[in-house]
Image (tube, rainbow, N blue to C red):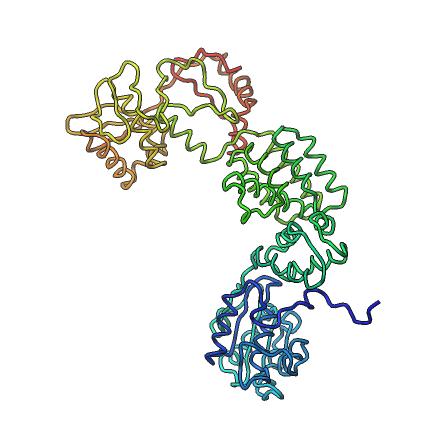
Length: 576
């Protein structure tokens, strides 16, 4: 047994020079240039998340300013002189490290103000490193302001914080601000490889990348995880060891949840959640891992097998490839948004588990991808008199024989040449201008509405609620809005929207120069008393059970209030 006390990896391999600091080149370069040119500021503010090198950089700066092996400040402190060694060990009397969390009162700041006037005992500069400075009280900050603005020439302040928004602007304005970045996965892996080699051990690249991903850019977190794994593995660190030591859920559980979701198997998903909870795994971590898993699916689905974005073992990449192509992009985005909402703090494990189970059930049962974007797209096509192509995954089949007066040509998607409507004159859509009017007015209008939807989404949506009434020789187009289209009327009453409509028609037609809109009055229809009594209960209840309608109601948190039959369809039977 060794007589030397054990030193943690994070302390043992702490950077001692600017060149050893990982992932903060933009800061170390600036500091080295300042030391070489002699433009040394009296107050520095280091901002960044935990464990990425703020205090370490402050100590290196202190050594660079006070190294006795050089005649003045240097970019390469020797690390051997008494000042360098005492600063590295935290025992130098001229480099005062203060914890802002426990020394945050006015009295503590007054003590700093009294001692800062004293010259350093064995160094060039007296350096105050205040960690977690955001925890100082407002009165303490105010007491520190004058000293920060005009300190004695031998005093330098280094303020470090993880929460910059809590620091008064008056303090920030008196300091040189340096924002530390989270370290990239690539840089973290290189650092871990170096430490593992110096420790005389081996580790697989997959294991080191897994450690770097869990650390999320924090050097100290990555080193602490590696320290634990060295104790666990003794010789070789594997990818499986990372999961075992950190208590992570194995990848197979995520693959099983994904497969069960695709198959609509709610029971299997709930059983996996139950197993995770029963084995004592942290549900919050499990939800974050689920979020990361579906994020990987989305990245693979949209960007392909990019190692720079995924960094997964080859076997896991193959598993992602199989599952990613089975999900629509919209579905993956919705799942990621749902898991992100579940990452919020919950009062108990039970609350988070219940929310997770409800989310999985909802995502599986409501399997129709309904989003605002898809609804808007459908509205444009419906407004143009057409329907979207049926989708095997989400859209129901089109009716076999719609009413004759509502039948319209399907708006083509990237057609080589548009086909003319049956029984109408040939109409050339899209780029070519047309002369609006005549027997083909209705078909021409449908083409124009579709073109409007391609150029301006909102214009196409609201034009779908309008129908052409007449075209005058003066170039005036009379449009009538559907009964109840109050929002469309308000849209076109705005001058800029009305001008946009007229500009669109002038661009795509030869004869239209102005537009006049009016709102049609709703026609009152007499309905038999027996039907009035039966339809709200029977027909509405039957429609609410339809999968597509249920998905829309769930998405918009709505309910069916009224059913308005199409013209000539009063006697049509409810859908089966």
